[in-house]
Image (cartoon, rainbow, N blue to C red; front, side):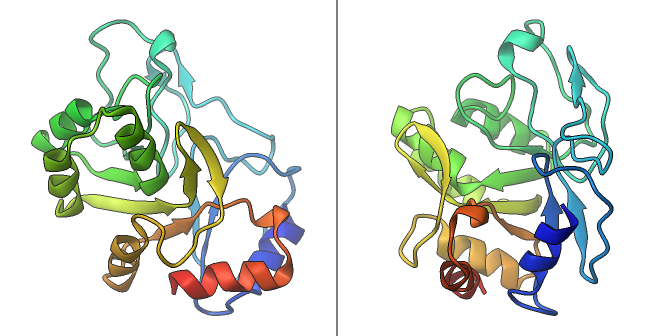
Length: 199
């Protein structure tokens, strides 16, 4: 984990931070940049449990909602929790109606543009809700990668990818923007290209 963090931060020294997520072998991280935590990161395990049924048992900057099958009908998330927009199968923020309800309630959101693309592919996110979300002021962070139709593939971005310009505008305004493509699958040159297209 430490080696991966150092490699990523070196791509744009002084211009990037890291959002730590599960997946790498646990190890201490000592990098000189802003750090955020997302959905179950811990330096002591590959993945910490985030939800126990509908009860939050892990705290970080943002989380995925629980899966629909993990909670009872009518489940409500804690008010102060930053949850990520998802896609079918999740208990919250998985469709346009749920996103609209979250905005009506004034919730802070982590917006994943690839997940919104998946919702549009399924026809469960209307243009009116999408436009409202694009202008919504309570966005705590933006996640960027590309999807493939109905699958969340965390594929690399390209300059004309949907949502990239909107994400850049949020980055310029100071909102944390997390590039979520699978960097470990890319060459050094491709990694630099991904960073350059975002900043």
